[in-house]
Amino acid sequence: MNFLIIDGVDITHSRLVDLTKLADQAKPFYDWVEAQFKSVVSMSQTLDEILQTAKPDEIQAAITHCYSVSRVSNLPLLFDGVGRSYPHNKACYYFFSWIIRDAPQQRLAPLIQRIVKNSGKRRLDAEVEAITKLICKYRADVKTFEWQAIREIIIDRLEGSRRSIKGHEKETIVRTALLMAIQSYYYQNGHYGKFSGIEIADTQIMVGNESFDVSINLMGASGNCEARILVPIKTRETEGGGHSHLFTRDITSAINSAKFDNPDDYLIVVIVAKNWSEREAENIRALVDHAAIFDQSPNQFTEFSSSEQEKLNNFFSSVFNGVYLRSNPVDTLPLGG
Image (cartoon, rainbow, N blue to C red):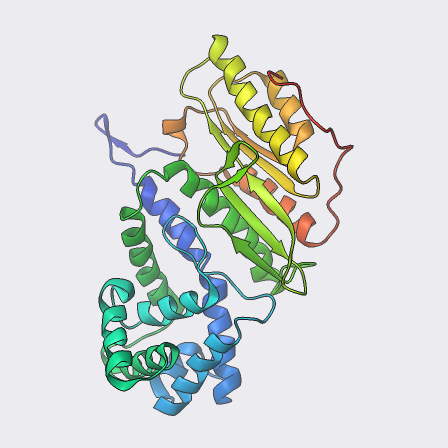
């Protein structure tokens, strides 16, 4: 990363770079919503033009349609400030709320619940009706629903979300890179290749006795999980000596647990360590499906380099296309490398 230094003072705003990268990955969801609106209201205009001119019943029908396709394959993703994807219905609620109203969870959701209580309406019907009426009432004040304007709103919402979630800095950087790889493929193809959908767990998972910071379910046509992508994130604060041996032991333990649990799962290892053994790094690369290794101290790790991001994109592309070939499997790696 390039640091911005003035008279010895670092004024770098690395968080903005990360947030803009994350916000840009919401563009496929925006494009998908636009396509649904065009289909439902039979208009060829942009989403902005439709929202500005369509009748309330047309907007309500289009929003309802967006919610209703939750069981359809190849749906795009929307996510929070640390790159955790929302279930589809919640993604729709947040997206439409974000474009017309702040704080959908803290402020709007309790009001919708009161509507449900007073009217006896279904929660979904109350949500759609409230969002529709908000759009129609305030669209002249908002003036635009074009992507560039929505992008700024999403950046702001992601930042607010991130502030409320502490202790996930390194995980967030990795989740952003993973989302960029997934969304890059989806943006180009409109689907997830041989898989019908993607589910990204919002918390760590345990495999054996090892925790994996990020896990991605690759869904089959029947809605079952065909395979997982498991991602341990390993960082080392110190250099050399016995610390190096223990660090390698920690990594190999995670690899062994993943391979023993399900050899069909894919394993991506993200390692951030200054002056880690090149020999040990190459050993790890040979044993996992993909390794992103950064010769940095953890406090310097703020993003994937363009070259590492491209490698990650290519890996996901090969998996989605069904052309990724594993090398000869190794059941376990001796602890300690």
